Amino acid sequence: MRQWRTIALDRDGRTLHARIAAPDEAAVARLLRRSGAVPLEIKADRQGVFGFAVGDALSRAELSLVLRELATMLGAGQDLDHALQFLQQTAPRSRVRRVMAQVHEEIRNGASLAAAMAMQPRSFSRLVIGMVRGGEAGGALAVTLDRLAALTEAQQALATTIQSALIYPALLVVAAIGAISLLLVQILPQFVPLFEQNGAALPASTRFLLDAGEMVGRIWPWALLGVLAVLMACRLALRRPGIRLAVDRLVLRLPLIGYLQREILAARLCRSLGTLLQNGVSLVPTLAIVREVLGNAAAMQALDRATEAARDGAGLSGALAASGIFPERTVHLLRLGEETAKLASVALRAAEIHEEAARVTTQRLTALLTPAITIVMGAVIAGIVSSLLLAMLSLNDLAQ
Image 1 (spheres, rainbow, N blue to C red):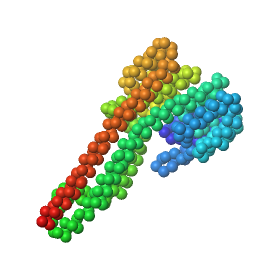
Image 2: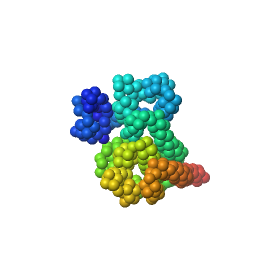
Image 3: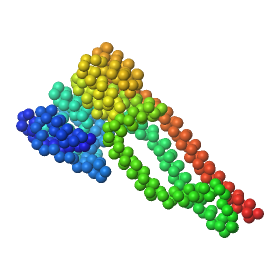
Image 4: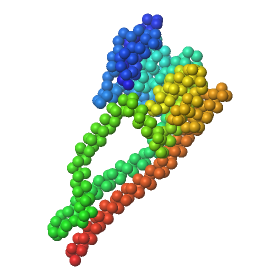
């Protein structure tokens, strides 16, 4: 998907400025006409090096802060104009101030909050924009923002838990690579002059490690460039729908990581579904918005089929069960919500269950990774030290 800057006329003849994510210019024009707007200008958004988008974008934590503060101020009786002005003055980062200044400017030009947010698609997702639009239409913007803040805070808490749990294993890997590289490149070569002066041959294991260290010292810049090239090629390849779908399906089949990914997907689905339904959005538009927050092509495809089933009057849970993507617990709870006409509340309860399951799985994964990395690192370092000791003993034998 590429980002496009558009200028269009709405049904009332007002000029609209927006950024739209779409594969090509024709798709952008179709989206605008479908919404009742007449496209005047469509330009590709600026892209950075290697296709990375350029511009301000709020992080998930910054978005949570903005939504929570807006909900608090509007709930306390503050008007939107002053609430946004206060946000610009008190925001901890300049990026947040710039984004909110742009939103504030659009509102002063007559746009609604949802329309102003839609002009910042890298900061505000379709889910946020859709809920804000519904809240404005229903006269319950403060309540809607409060629910949105709760949703983003829950998503941020889950992401933070997973990231924090993986920091220690990542540091262990870096430390292991550094220690092994130091031994191979700096420590071992110091023994070579001793053997050359005494006319002795190095032990085979020591010679092997010396050759390995020499190779590492010689090729590491090219190896680093190669890794970066591979990562960039993978990034470009994953933009192709077929490759992305195959990779996402493969990830879901992995033994432990696949289970964790399914729990995270179920938590995202249920949390977003329950929040939107609770806010008064009907099921089919809700599923179209939820699709954008899943982040997994296989899950998105499954939800597309579920959306078609819901549009035809069939149940949501049956189509999700047929996909085999989401856990059985998800399907069972959503079926219960459909049967009792309490889908929103049951979905939110299911989200809490899946978020807790994802936290527990992450802790177990970390508990397995940490000793495994430690054992491997210890074994490699022990092998290098043993080779050093063997070389020293051979020198001692030669001296005697």
